[in-house]
Image 1 (cartoon, rainbow, N blue to C red):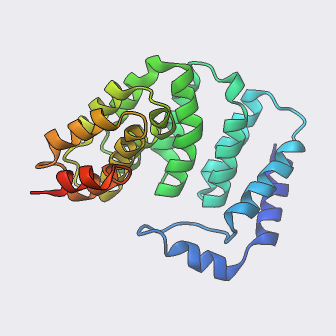
Image 2 (cartoon, helix red, strand yellow; image 1 turned 180 degrees about the vertical axis):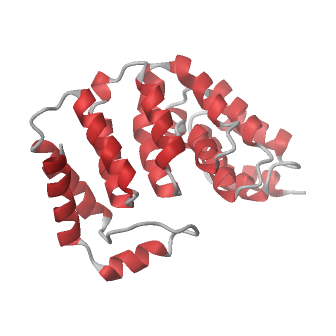
Length: 235
């Protein structure tokens, strides 16, 4: 296991660039650990090293992912997200506990949160919708990233028109949250849902607009036609 990770890390270090690292840090309010690679390079390196793994059992891949998450480096978290998503055909219900551990223990910024949740957790929930109840529990967490994860895990299903009722429930739970990362997360979820359910989402926004944080409102209405946006923003 260590050889696989060690080789990956050497490749990341070799491709790192100080200018890219400093530029990347500016996207985050919190302190982040970066090698300093462009996303395309991380993706390429991730794919190359995944091909070289001989034991592609899900248990082995997830163990590698754990080690990557533990490092705290954002680029390694992206590789972990990619490798976990590669195992999506093998996802089983118990995997929710693993994803929950990664979100609650290791995620410390919006980029790692969204990369994991948009694809890996979102795909899992589409496969096992009974775990929507787990996302509703995440929405009640004290951890800002777990709360954001409850919403951004539903971005892709929302665009496909799925889980609208559950989306509204999670938006209700997160409604008055003071954290801008959470506000943006659930606003983004509503925006995604509006692509398939414009009228329902617009009606929901109109019911909530007087109490919804302005940040959430602006995100939620981004995909609406100008005339509906104007109604939503009117006092």
